[in-house]
Image (cartoon, rainbow, N blue to C red; front, side, top):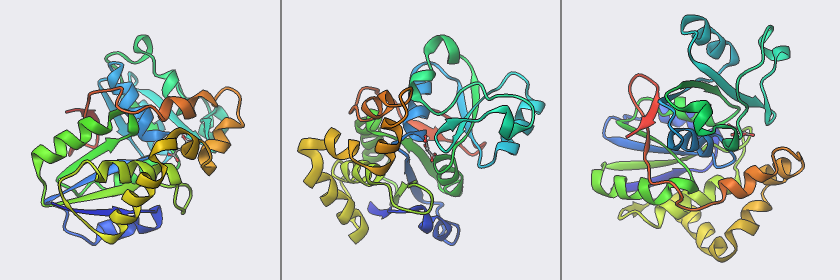
Amino acid sequence: MKVDTLLSPAELPTLARRDLRASACVVFDILRATSTFVTALQNGAKAIIPVSEISEAVTLRQQQPDVLLAGERNGIKISAALTGSFDFDFGNSPREFRPEKVRGKTIVSTTTNGTRALRACAGANIVLASSLLNLAATAKFLNQAQPAEIFLVCAGTGEGVALEDVLAAGALAGLLAGECSDTTEIAARTYVSARTELAAVLGGSLNARRLLAIPELRADVAFCSQRDVFNLVAEMRADGAIRRR
Ligand code: MLT
């Protein structure tokens, strides 16, 4: 297995130029989209449908009134001011997706970077949404599946690199029995240099500081920093929905 890493969303367009039919893409948006999707599945959600735009989510709700809508812009739950008529059911905090709210439900989500990164991987044979919460389960699955090539896709922030995504990609790279590209080596070494104080390093990232400054979202940082609390693999299938594998 070759293990390559896209460190920033500026590299996402390169995926469209590649033949990904024998490849796996693993998307990390640690703060918070992929951590949230993994949590929702752990708590019994049937599926998460990531979409890029608010208008796509609203159209899906009109077509399928039973779906719940989730997502954020600037970290904050999408409100009627953005949809034109109604508030979304959830923001993008993993702690909102409690079992009693999500069990058996299909959730359509649009976030700033995470859902965009997932959609950019749609041509790959295997697309996984990963997080620190389910890192070991993701690694175990990939080591068994042995795709020819794995792309660790860091969703980032805006057009830039997000430290927490690179740390998670590097942590996963260290668990994979594969041949690393230089960018994977950069991620792996970043993780190794931070691992003894991971929560503190992650907590100092730009995204963490942004969330820590919002009283109702600050606990998301500690939640998303937990390692291997869920034993599940989250896979986006050809129909565009993320489900437990
Ligand atoms: C994103 O997709 O950009 C994020 O997950 C942002 C957030 O949750 O605040």
